[in-house]
Amino acid sequence: MDAKKLAQNLARNLPRNAASLIAQGLKLIPGEIPKTVYLELKGDYPVFAPKSPLPIPIPLPGQKKTETLEELKNQLEAVAKVNGVEEVVILERGFGGGLSSAYAIHQMLHNLKESGKNVLFYADS
Image (cartoon, rainbow, N blue to C red; front, side):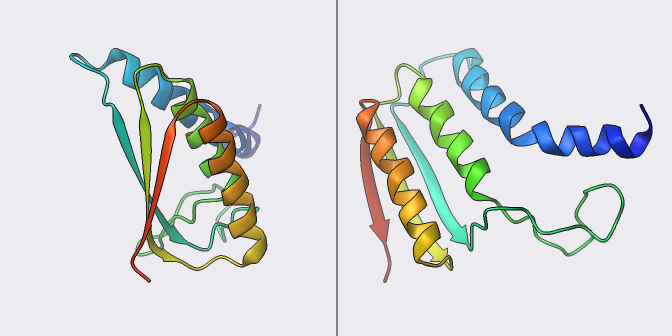
């Protein structure tokens, strides 16, 4: 497998692997599992990540990583699977997505609540 295909495969599986690592990491942290998880909503949350001008999908210096809806969904699903987490606090800090992104996030939070977690949402504006 050449380097370009390897990098694309890594980038494609990164959200799923990150969600799994979060779930496993919370289980492996010594001491108590946190009862509350905080999550900040910042940015646009596009469906797909923007294309990188480089052949390997790494951010350029000064370029911020854009979190996609799929990555957010994987994070919330990982938190839903962790026993011991009782509530999730969502802090809105500059959400710039449109109505479709807002509706998708609403559905994700509804699914999180259905999994038995308390969901609190706080917005400055």
